[in-house]
Image (tube, rainbow, N blue to C red; front, side, top):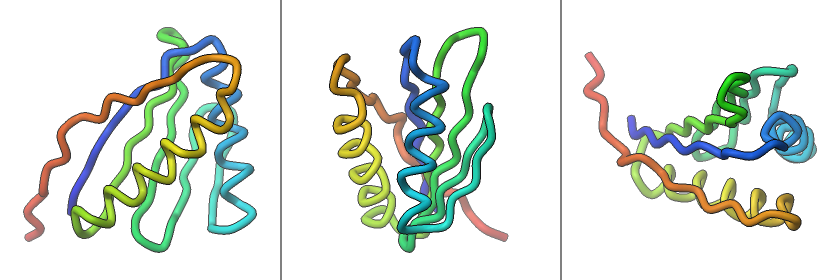
Length: 102
């Protein structure tokens, strides 16, 4: 399994969680509330968590293979750019790591 994490630091972080999950739910399974969300793409998934004190949105993506993870990240980057027209958001992804399954 491959993983990658990024953060959005914005006064609108909580709204991005709601908007992203609602938008993706039109095409793929997605669940969310005020603090957490999960989007299940065909190639992998993304968990979203609003961090109140930091006013950040954490994006934690996972997929079976590295190309699938890159696809999930690309979808998120494209949609975040589209939704954040009034502010520039650049995602810095942590290095993705392979987790050994037992």
